[in-house]
Every structure is written in C-alpha cells, then in structure tokens.
Figure (tube, rainbow, N blue to C red):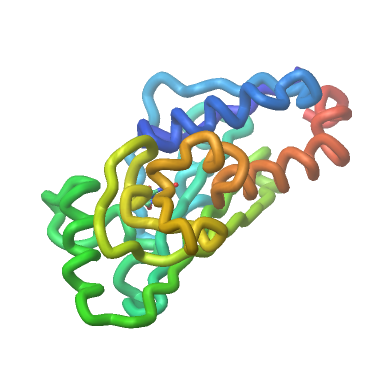
Length: 206
Ligand code: IMP
C-alpha cells in the first residue's frame, strides 16, 4: 500500500483533512501519515500553487516519501492583493484569527461589493518527476458581523453563496463544510483522479 504524508501543522486544516481522509479510505489503497517534525516553511511564493509546492516538496525532501500539502486563502473582490495568498498574514503579524476577522470587517465598512471566495490548492509531491495539483473554490460574501462557532480562520465572517438569503455563516455549517468547502472539493478532485489513475497501481510504480 502506498504511503502519503500530509504536510500541515495548521490545527484547523489538520482536523478537516483527518475527516476527509477517513471518509473514503476503504477505496483509497493509500495510508495517510502525519510527519512528526515538519520543517518550518516560509511561504515566499505569490500563488497558492507556489506555496503548496514549497510545503509539499520540503516535506518530501525531508522524508524522501510522497507528501501532499495545501495552501489556501480568502480572496475578497473589494480588497485585491490584500488577503488571498497572504490571508494567514493579513494585518499585523501578532493578530490571531479573530483579530484578522475584525480587521477585515473594519476594512469592509461602507463597501457594497462584499463578494469573495475561498480557494484551496493541493500539491501532491510524489517524486521529483511527478507532482499533481488540484484546486477547489467556495464562493460567498463577507458578512456584516462575526459569528463564532466551528471551523477556523475566516469561517465566522463568511456566508456561502447558497446560504446568502438565510445569512448563515460558515462557522455555523460544520457538517455542510465537510462536503462543500474549497478544501473538500480540491480533495475530492484529487481522490477521484488518484483512485482512477494511480493509487490502484501505486505498488508497482513506487
Ligand atoms: P496558509 O494556507 O497556511 O497560507 O493559510 C491560509 C489561511 O487562509 C488560513 O490561516 C486562514 O486564515 C484562511 N483559510 C484557509 N482556509 C480556510 C477555511 O476553510 N476557513 C477559514 N479560513 C481559511
């Protein structure tokens, strides 16, 4: 059975990945593993793809085993270039998730166009010759207030397009998020691709 390392130290992402991985595991023919000591990677690239590659390749280089990583962010139409690939570092470096949501709320004061989307890019670094990328997006809008609940990051300030009329925030939609988030979508693309093309014959390739 192929072994694949998940290169993330973000507790919010880790929790979501564990749930995603557990769901279809019977058909995967892959054992997902968590490395003990992940190298600290500075996210120096300007795209989600670039940073996902940095994270997955540094894990691969340390372990010499197939690894995958995610880079994600919130893209706000009215604030181009401010969040996106830099979402985790929005505002002052000392801010936590709540501080960043408060800052976003402040910056959105008086702005009518509140459209935004989450994007997630997964990089599967299988070997120096083979890397695969998958992307998922979730459209929505920036809410007018923060609502705490489940999730992490900007979930408390994000209303998915499907819940616009009810005004329900992603932080209140934990079960829905498991199936419909940008991360869940990207992972389902990857799972479909690998189940059909790779994992079933992984033992003979690697
Ligand atoms: P990075 O991928 O480590 O650069 O971090 C991405 C950042 O984007 C996170 O720290 C969050 O602030 C935000 N983010 C990414 N995915 C989500 C999500 O599913 N919910 C809320 N915020 C997210």
